[in-house]
Each structure stands twice: as C-alpha cells, then as structure tokens.
Length: 558
Image (cartoon, rainbow, N blue to C red; front, side):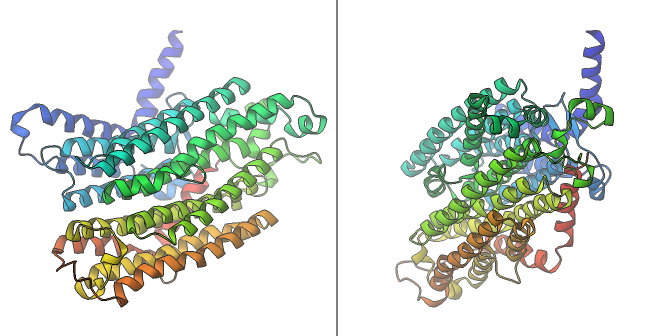
C-alpha cells in the first residue's frame, strides 16, 4: 500500500502536474478573479487585464518543452493514473482554444459586454467553460469525459443568458440548459452501460475489451445478441452527448435559439470552442474503439511493451490473418454512423440557412453545416484505422487544420455582428445594406469571411475544405465517395445564402432608418486583424499544416 501511494504521489508531482500546467494557470486565474471582488481597493481595477494575462500565460505554457517538432516523435503520456492523456491532440487543442479565448477576451473588452463592476463573473464563466473544454480534449477515461462535458456546459448555459433584463436571452439560456440536461443524462446512462459491460471506463482499454469479445464471431454465430445490442445502445447514448456539443442533427435544436438569444461574443465562443473540444473527444472515441493495436491480445501487448494508449499501426505491424479483424464491425459501424450524421447535418444546416433574415441566426445554421463538414474526416478515420496508419494520420491532421482555420472565420464573422449590433442596434441582414459605402473595412472583412466559409480560393477556408475532402477521396470506399459528393453539393448550396449577405452589403442602398454608423478605429482594426489570417494562412500554410501533421503523428505513436 505504501509503495502504491508513493508511486501515485511521484507520478502526480513529477509527471502529471508539470504537463497539466496550462489548466492549473486557468484555475489560478479564476480564483484570483473571484478573490478580487472581496476587496474594496480592487473596485476600480479592470478584471480584463487579469483575465488576459492569465490566459496568455496559460497559452505560453502550452508549448511543448521539446519544441513543436517533437510532437511527431513523443509518445502519449497518461496523466493522473490514466484519467487524462498528454499527446499531440492535447497540445494542438490547448494552443487553439487558448489563442481563441485571448481573442474573445479582447472582443469582449472592445464591445463593453463585461462591465467593470461585474466583469469578473463573465470572465470566470468564460475561463471555466474553457477549462472544461481542455479536459474534454485530453480525456482518457469515461468519467473524465463526463466531467469535462459538464464543466464546459454549465458555464455556457449562464453565458447565453448573461444579458440582464433580456427575455430572449433568458429563454435561450433555459432552452440550452434543458437540452443540455437531457443530453447529459442520456450520455451518463450510456457511459454506465459501456463501463458495466466491458468492466472498464479507461478509453484505450475499452478497445482491448471489444477486441477480446471477437465481435465478428459473435455476430456470425448469433450469440450474446443482448450484449451486442446493449453495447450499441451505450455507444449511441454517448454519441448523443457528443452530438449535442457539436450541434449535430438531430440534436441541434438548441443552437439557433441559443445563438440568437446570446450576445454575438458568446455565440462566437460557443461556435468554435465547444465544437473543437467535442471533435477532439470524437477523435479519441474513434481511436479507442477502432485502433488495430487494441486487437492484439493482452499477452502480446505486455510482451511487446506497447503502452495502453489507443494508437494506430500500419498494416505491416498487424498480425496476418484471413479472418476478419476483431474490430472490423466497430469500424464499419462508426464509419456509417458518423458519415450519415455528417451528411444530414451539413445538408440541414445549409437548407435552413437559406431562409434566415437574422445574420446571427444564419451564422448559427452555418455553424451546424460546418459541424457536418468537420465530422467527415472522423468517418474517414474510422475506415482508415484498419488500413493505413499514414492515411489515418492524414485524416486527423485535416480535421486539426480545419479547426485552426475555422477559429478565425467564425470569430471574425461574429465580431463584425457584435460591432454592428452596438452601432445600429440590429442584427437583421437588411440593415447591413450599403455597408460597403458607409464602413468599407467592415464590409470587405465580412465579404472575405463569407467567401472563406464557402471555401473559395485564395482564402484559408479553401485549404480547410480541401484537406477534409481529400481524405474522403483517399479512403476511396463507396461510402466515403458518396460523402464527398454530398459535401461538394452542400458547398455549392452554401454559396446561395452567403452571396445573399454580400449582395445586400454591396448592391442595396443604405436604409433610411439606420442613420450614420458610429464605428470607431479599434473595432474596425480588430475586425481586420482577425480577418487577415484568412489570407496569410492560404499563402503561408506551412506553420499550421506542419503543426497539425506533427500532432496527428504523435497521437498515433505506439
């Protein structure tokens, strides 16, 4: 017992805590923000500076000690006795989310959403939700998965209704909370089913236990159909929680209402951070239940010294056998399920966006559509894990590239909506008429963002979609090629409603009721600043693509 406690303490202090430093910095920042309200001398102190300094420090500490190039050669490290894992995906999501939060904090400062007297509350809620999303990104255990989802969700419910005396915001917050509570309950029941049937809640071990069941043999013989049905039901229930965070159809109902009722700043945060964390979890689940390494017997794993981390091996490393691989049914199930949800999600999002007259609600449906696009590489990943480690790595890298670019696209779009709301008091698309003449930098920035969301060159959105769609072509199965066709048709369809917004801004005369726009220098500079990366990433994509590829390769190391 003494040796066990000593081992846990040594591992926690020597390995886990140093690699968990960014999250600890966020916790310390939140504590300081709350403590600052207890002392009168800090009444005139703007909490924004404490929040931004703490977040920047967390961002700096997220950089790997061996440099970004070391991600491709550093194997995953389990933290806190396997509850979390430190790998390339963890590092990439930390960098993306913390950079995004820094930009959102600056946006909140410029729009005046967080007043000095209650700014601590908004900043603590924002950082608390971010902490939950970081836990989701590094989760390695079903209990940590649920903890991360709840820590990300509960502050988000409050952020949606943060505007005082707003009936629409309160209604949106309530809807969001009700849907979230239902999804969390279903997800928790699914977790209990999986953990009970497989006798483990450790994600990599779940794959090993699934391989032990010999699913192809059970399906062929018709034995233990009740167990198989319960496993499928448990997986679907866990998928409900992930689909809710992704706002994937049919669990998207909260998204348009929540985005319309919330402020544009909060909608920007939810549209990017929530989806990035949920996609990271989807990758981890897919690797856990589809990895060829899990198909090796426990004795083989122990004799070869392979750590219990869900990894992907190349076909040359797998034992030759004419029989179907034990996890082949799981890969097929995951590929079909994720592909079907992705196709329906992007199609519904684009069709629903066609009739919108509120720009923030239109962007909400656009967010749903992009969730469908970003799920497509995960469907390819489920197919490719049993074929080639290199192609599976490309699937993960393409999704990480999409996330990195999507960050700037959505932030810029919602930032412009926030500035225009402050200037005109309206979010209606018709009130953007003539914007090219009254505020040229804002109008040009919005047009650039809309073109990037469509995926037109020479903008970064083209690289994001090209990378995601290329993986589908590399997979080459009839299902993936069908999914590629659906994605291409939806991209053409999205051009209709994005062009409608651009047409209103450029071709229609200014509305008489709007009056002169009062956009100061700093909001305009911010909108331009977060739009410029859409050009620079297209011209110089090396930094983002190399980081994403290194993160993906490190994730798949044995």
